[in-house]
Amino acid sequence: MYGRGAQGDPHKVIFGTNNEWLLPLVARVAWKPLDLTPVTAMAFDEFMLWVKEDSPYRSAADLVAAARERPGVLRMGGSQTRDTDQTLTLLIQKAAGIRFTYIPFRGGGEAGVQLAGGHIDANTNNPSESTGGWRGGQVRPVCVFRREPLPAGPRVTEAQSWSDIPPCAAQGITVDEFRMPRTVFLPPAVPPGAQSFWADVMRKVSETPEWQDYIQRTSQTAALLSPDQMRALMQTEERAARELYGPEGWLVN
Image (cartoon, rainbow, N blue to C red; front, side, top):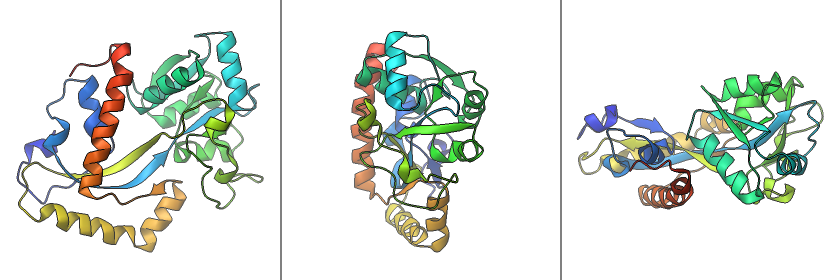
């Protein structure tokens, strides 16, 4: 909303996620997705399916089988309501023909704590949100929502790294890919040249050792979308979200 109100100001840079174009579908907010000026998406946050370390579900297939036997009994925790975690939960349910009871929390950190304490059966945290819990033997990932495993890297636990976690599609959940872009916008109606100026700034940032170290530490996937690619991504995701949210009665716009 602050960015929408800074119309024409090329010195206001807005860092966000796909909430910029998805939140207006489910909440009455004071902006429309195309009000802001897209600059780039610099990274994609990955999503994993997590269970408690001592859970009887040793794989995603085990969790799916249990949910199929007891529809609505297993509890899936996530960050907020009608946000990315609940969206992914809907996709899992649709793909596997199962049903969870979704429980929203204030953020991924809280969802991780609730899983470690056994108060929920699973969550869909990003890798960085549950690294400590996995390393500490409290929770463990059973699959990643990617077409292929994450790239090889240092071990997180004594025995495993992120690249050891199989894709969810290979575990009976046919959601090939689900990622959250880390986006950069400018306010509406900025002067000509501001969009390309900031796109070039972000390109230079993406080439620094500090940025590449940050990407590795947070287990994100580096990206550098052009403004046109950003706009295409926004339109594609909005269409898919409308199809998913409509039957749930979530749409307000």
